[in-house]
Length: 51
Image (cartoon, rainbow, N blue to C red; front, side):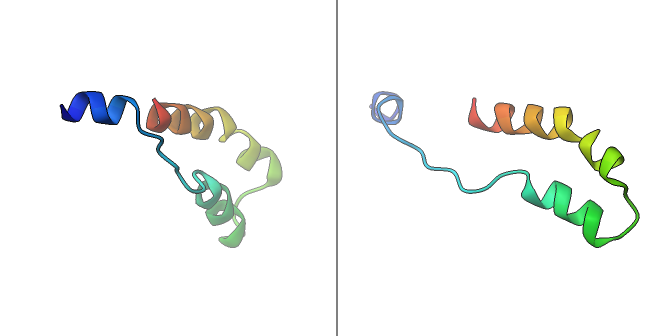
């Protein structure tokens, strides 16, 4: 079945989260401290995407 096939499959996911930080810096409106404050939310989103 499809479920069994996908249960044994390996999914390769590219870079996740980089743009969340790059956008903050490229805009020049965020300090490093403010960008660092995003880390828990970005990591949480990555964990949700992987799970």
